[in-house]
Amino acid sequence: MWRHVRACSRSVRPSRLGLQRRPCGTTSSTGSPTLTTPRRVAPQKVLLHSCCAPCSGSMVEELVAGGHHVTIFFYNPNIHPREEYEIRKEENKRFAERIGTPFVDADYDVDEWFKRARGMEFDPERGRRCTMCFDMRMERTALYAHENGFDCFTTTNATSRWKDQEQVNSSGFRAAAKYNFMPYFWKYDWQTDAMTERKYRINAEQRFYKQEYCGCSYSLRDSNIWRKQNGIPPVQIGGETAGLGSRYFENPEDDAREESVEVVEAFFASADRHFDNTLVYKGRQRQADKAAARDETGSTCNNW
View 1 (cartoon, rainbow, N blue to C red):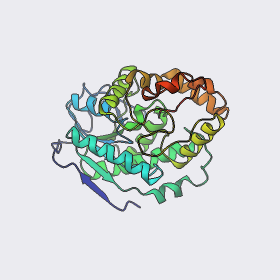
View 2: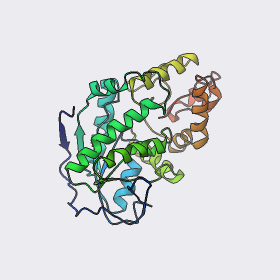
View 3: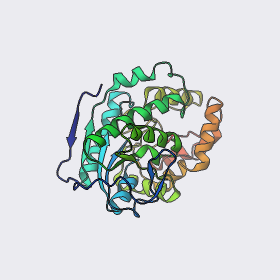
View 4: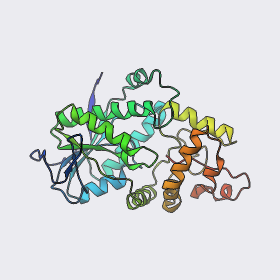
């Protein structure tokens, strides 16, 4: 199933640490250590599964500031179509090279992902299909971490409030359990207001590509259905023009507000009613589209 993995950005390599299976912190009900903060534990060799560059910046910064040795692991067979996958991967790779962090480019493995998704094509966001998706990616991350002497692994999926943090963490624990928590899964609250604000400041500084949907073909389908229902242009893959708003992150305050707890909760409440609540998106305009923000049509956007 796992056909190949190739490593990139080898100019800076993490030092090999003695495996510390019991770092300070509490222990979860699963048996995997639950660390309090990246800056309060002994340096670890961390394999960071990354879904995209915008979700990686603040997490990498926090881990490195704590003295940890981080390697970014890109394994996301869910991202569709291939053009969008390559855009997100190449941007992530450039970011890793820019900050001197090792980057592992894993296999796309899209056929296996679609095989696992059979029967769940119409499941809602945060449903069974998302659990399958997290499981698949965490299993592959745990395997690589186990085979390459990492102390622990974690994922940038946990930084996004659009994701159910417990759903993400549960997949991480299940994957770690396959190897008797050697390596262990690092559980930490990456969705604090401070982390979210810092994430978007880094995104604006780096001018990252602003994706318009979560990643999988079903997310793309559902996003476009909602947009059509509300008279909004469809998602655009790549290019300098987004389907709605600006193509790149430019205004950290506006972007952070789009991921506020209130907005996210309202979105999923609306999703449960088949995306019939357009008020959720009132005022959520991209910095590069001020004219549209003032337009009486009230066009709005989706920031994943």
